[in-house]
Amino acid sequence: MKILMLGSPGAGKGTQAQWIAKKYGIAHISTGDILRVNIKNETELGKKAKIYMDQGLLVPDDLICDLVINRIFHLDVVNGYVLDGFPRTLSQAEVLTAALDQSDVKVDHVIYIEVPDAKIVNRMSGRRVCLVCGATYHVKYNPPKVEDKCDICGGVLILRDDDKPETVRKRLDIYHAQMHTLIDYYNAASILVKVDGTKDIDKVFQDIVKILGV
Ligand code: AMP
Image 1 (cartoon, rainbow, N blue to C red):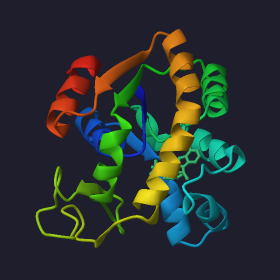
Image 2: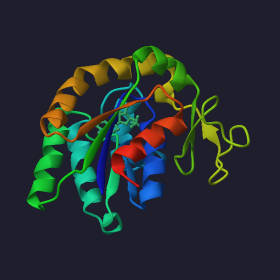
Image 3: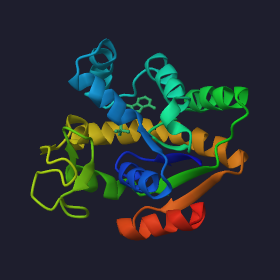
Image 4: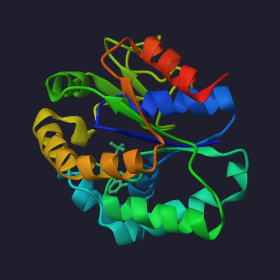
C-alpha cells in the first residue's frame, strides 16, 4: 500500500501517518523527521536544511527530492509506505509521479487532512516532539504518559523552533501558496480523499481506516 498524506503543518499528518504505518505494517517516511535527524547529526544536508527550516521555509527541491526517491525504493519499504510531508509542491509531486511511473508503481491513496488555519496555530504551540525517536505528542490532545517524556523511548520532548507561533504563520502562508495546485493535481488523478482533521484524533484515524480498508 502506498499512501501520501497532505495537510497543513499541524493538521495531524505525523500522528496519523505513524498509526497507519503501524496498523498496516508499512514504512513511515517523514521528510521532516529525516531532515531533523540530519540536523541533529550535523550532516551537510542537515546544515543546509536548517537554514530554511528555522525560518519556516521549504527546503529546496534539490535537497529533498533525490532523498525521498531513494528512500521509497529502499528494501524496507517492500510492503509499501506512508509518505508524510512529501510532496509539498507541484514540482515535487511531478518528480514523484515520474519516478513511480518508471517502475510502473502507483500511489493508492492521497489522504488530505483538512483543518482551518484558526485551529492550527493554537494546536502547534502545544505540540511536542521526541528529540530521540521523533514521535509527536500534544500537551492537550495526545499527551505523553509522563510530562515531557516520550512514551516510546523515554527521550526528552521539546517544542520545535518551527512550531513557534510566528514561524507557524509563515509556514501556513507557504503551505497555502502551494497546496491548491497539489490538491488539484491529485484530484485530477481521482486518488485524493478529504478527511475532517478537526475531529478527535482517534476519530480521524477511524475515518482514514474506513478509506484504506481493514
Ligand atoms: P514537517 O515536520 O513535515 O512539518 O517539516 C518540517 C520542515 O521541514 C518544513 O517546514 C520544511 O522546512 C522542511 N520540509 C519537510 N518536508 C519538506 C518537503 N517535502 N519539501 C521542502 N521542505 C520540507
